[in-house]
Length: 615
Image (cartoon, rainbow, N blue to C red; front, side, top):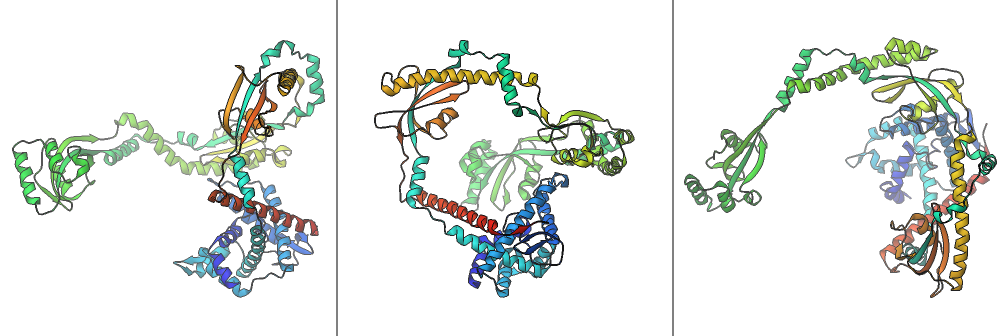
């Protein structure tokens, strides 16, 4: 047992357990501390064992914190608390069922085993050694004691052993894997004939009475979703920044800082490098003599330089700033004027001859051009504290006000309105799930209160209220008549086309006609998900049975308002090597799927047999 623990603690099981303890709402972690306390109010009873309210609320808190940690910008208003509570309770019930089953099977982990598991977990180690401080901090962050944590770890470990053993028991024969791969790689040859909607357009007739009858029989399909008309005010960092006064001198001071930061000189230099060696000195003297005689620097670099990359470019190193190469090279380069060549310069890389090819300077744009942007940046920076203060004051006032007019006047904000805000699919700012959830809450929708102040993002806060509530209701006929008419026209069109297709299919099956000619489109060796074939046609082609030898399988499919006749002529399975790694991987994948299904069935049976009571 201890050796298994040592092995598993370094691998998948350790990772699963740690993830579960922190965040998971899955069945492996929600048994958290079931059984830790008794004599407290319970939220459910499983086979006589209570899940206490204290246990339940702790797991709800952990789950909520995890959801927030997964958000790029954590926002509690985005949490669906009702859903979290429901998921946590269901997971805790299921985990208790599993823990009881493990106990019934006599599975246990000794205290020594728990100790070994804890000290072996990489999450609690520093430089390969167990850290009591890391362990204690982790347990405290979960809001539980060490004893509770040890009990949780023991139960999760045992439950996971059951899960692992059942899943590993899943099997899948290699032949099944080979067949799946052969089907995945299957190709099909077929031809299509399109019967266009325009060919029966004169026969299609949909009357107003037809539309009205269909509407009356299918009215439930046309409902206007529940919506609210909304008024809101919006406080933003930008609007606060507009009220911030930025003196001209502050703008000039910041511009001067930019000039100091962004003004720089660049020098385009070329060099001839002579690396240290027995003949280095003679080569240096030769290069110097030829330079004195007026030889071309680039030509000498190509001939003599030991830096092959720059030598091809005549020694050109491109533009460099002070400090890019540093040391003696920088010092010599900066001392030269444009077009000048230095004498031998020694560095750690060897001896250089340096030529400055060009000198250019860079500095910010003129003050007049940058001033507006600088002023906005300063205002934004200084507006942060003021925005935070106003946000707090607005939240307090909006909470106590019966309308939005008073806080709007106090903070100089515009009361905006929008009609038809639904539970989803809205434009800003009502794409924010937390704001919408509050709009449809009982306090706001039924009691007429303002929403809380909702941070739409880091620089914008909104308070809203409902001015009118529109329950879900049928859409009137005049709003949907056009779409009903189009639907009925399409149905009539396809019915008429199917009649023509049935007649032609009869001739094809008896041999009176063949799927050939200019009207037919031929497809060869089509694989699944081939983009060149329309999706409806491809789906129908791969659903048709394999044709008899020298025969066809026929079918039809709607493609928009057209109808397509399909003549499938050949099916070829993909070639698969039964001994290949691909087959082994597929067999393993299928075995895991089967194991997961068996485990799901196992858990479902335990759940159905358990006596579960909820107060």
